[in-house]
Image (cartoon, rainbow, N blue to C red; front, side):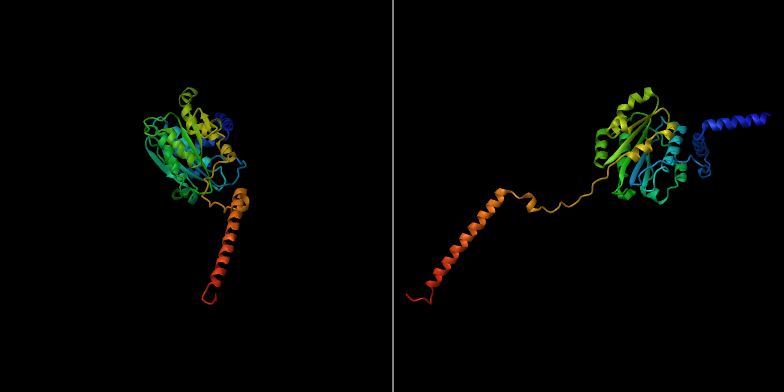
Length: 294
């Protein structure tokens, strides 16, 4: 009977946790250094998402204010989130503190979408938060050398738990650069409501307009699994950087000016008068030439 009682408690607990139990299994196996391929993560929700070309950079917080378990939650989020999009969506992953690390770019993701080994080896950087510089480095991912595509909509997801500290760069200059590159930005702030109020202005500065639709506030990193970010990205028109095109030839019929036409007619008439005078002059010269008799 005691064994049956324990089994009953386990079953009730598992049913209560539901699908979120698999998230904890993923984090636990990663923390223990086990092979994550043996874990069956939660199935992505089968929601309609147009299979258009998207390039998405995920920028995660590796500063010292992030606990080890919270960093694991970010890695779990990357692993699951990247599996929920259609095949025509590519991902790149950057980690930031006052140091920066590219874990994979678009080209790497396109060649191998199994991120288990890369994420298993990813270690937290520690240090302060150079968030503005991190955004600049994220913008630099959108190049052909990194596997970015000229016809893809561009997105940047920034996950952070606080204000930037000691960063030599300011937000306005890097945000302008991101805007020029046509990057739609989602700012995800994690922390208590009191803490978030302190750096909410920074989140709004990072996010694209309108900021209310591009800013997400969470109490804890484990809530990353439940945010409606995919739906926002799938519904977003995004921005495709316009490619230079040749200007179409100008048609005179579409831009003719009556005054110009009048001037042209006068010029033609003047040329006709000049031609008539030349003809008369030629006739006179012919009469006075060597063959004429006076």
